[in-house]
Amino acid sequence: MPLSMVKQGEPNKICRVGGREDTRRFIENLGFVAGAVVTVISVTGGSMIVNVKDSRVAIGRDMANKIMVV
Image 1: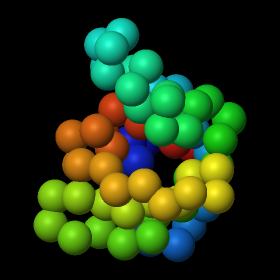
Image 2 (image 1 turned 135 degrees about the vertical axis):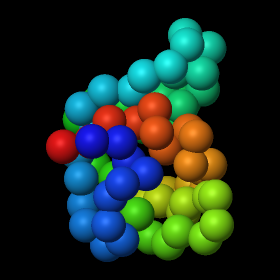
Image 3 (image 1 turned 90 degrees about the horizontal axis):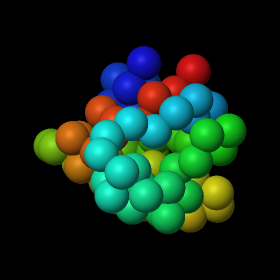
Image 4 (image 1 turned 45 degrees about the vertical axis):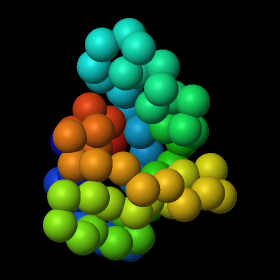
């Protein structure tokens, strides 16, 4: 399921990152790589604050839809 559908506070494992090559590379450079654990901290409007690899990152809902978690 996409990261945008995950409940707050639940740790999830990233299984794949979708999108075009340049978008996927940008997302992976932020730390969203397959096998990493990601936790949604908060959701406000169209953006999310997530914790990945001991860093907090704010991403848009459209970018969160490209990150698939288990």
